[in-house]
Image 1 (cartoon, one colour):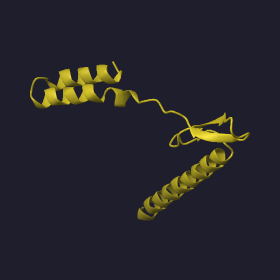
Image 2 (image 1 turned 135 degrees about the vertical axis):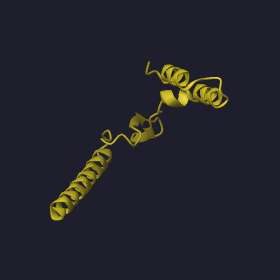
Image 3 (image 1 turned 180 degrees about the vertical axis):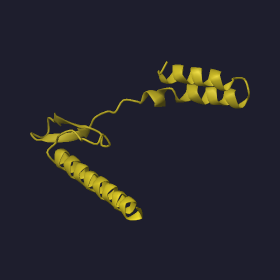
Length: 103
């Protein structure tokens, strides 16, 4: 029984490692060809033609602010109101859902 469990654990670990290596190789290959990254960790590059050069220059695309980053000040004020005891846990959760757009 222990052998089966250890074997299953080893199989899962090897499978996830192989999957991770495959995804890393696919990401590297797509980025080398100028394509979009499949892992979503790397900012997308757009190509523009400059007047001084005839070639293309990769420029990182402007990554828009996350909705969580935009709402950070509001979330901090909600946290402070909760810590001060002016909000109950239920009120805090409802307000937080409204801020991050889940409600």
